[in-house]
Picture 1 (tube, rainbow, N blue to C red):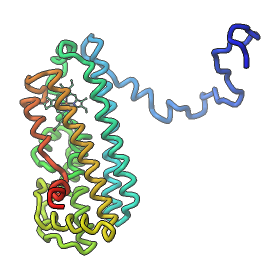
Picture 2: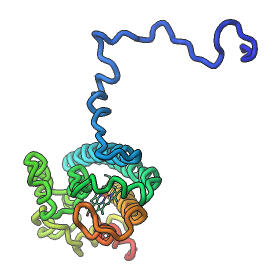
Picture 3: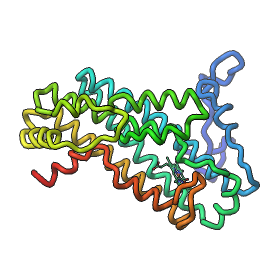
Picture 4: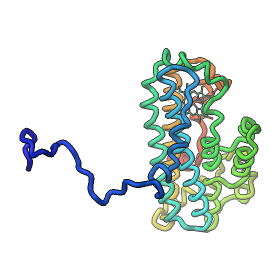
Length: 287
Ligand code: HEM
């Protein structure tokens, strides 16, 4: 081992280049080319001269990328469940759970933004708000929190509006899970399967009974049982994100109204009462 205090003409606290490392990217695709980094890393344009606005922009942009990935994975989970491929559905649902946990972690960074710092650039945001995040709305719709009224804020962007409207009208991840229950011979009311998927899901007794049968005979219905627990994982993680968002917002703006025009924290608190998979939580009382 070389002694750090006695030089043999080579610095010791240093890693030498290796001769096979590629260094010429004039005609070769580099890391930055592949990832389109020039575009991504030049998309931060603070509207004020406030130091902390960069944190605010980056945290939103990074969240949007994670939301995009979560949407991509949830679409796949829906396809997998539809085709009875539970193994792959479990794989992507587990990934969504980790993405949501990652998103929840980011509130820790944002809570270093003090109310005073935020107020210095808040006016520059105008009426823009995360409420208009279509990446987020897509996830809510894919999971099953359907609300036609929420399409309105996307009318100025026809391609986004049409994508969201499409997802709104299609069966959600939970609707597909209920179709799978029925396919396994569990008695689900036909009205649940034929429902208007653009409407909010209402808890149903036959669905509760079917899930209870699954939980009471988990060995027989093991993949449905596992699916149910994976869905519970997702709702758990999602609620943690909602809660940390609401709490961080309260910490930063107190009871001020939101830039998007809502009552702010009061409005965000109401989202905590929305369950994607109500019977999966209700059944626990009856076991
Ligand atoms: C200083 C930081 C933040 C504040 C003060 C804040 C505040 C708010 C408020 C008050 C609302 C309600 C709608 C409104 O009237 O504007 C809202 C909604 C929302 N925000 Fe934030 N937010 C912050 C950071 C973030 C971040 C980092 C994200 C990440 C994407 C985000 C995503 C959302 C989403 C998705 C909604 C809609 C929630 C729903 O429909 O229930 N927010 N935010």
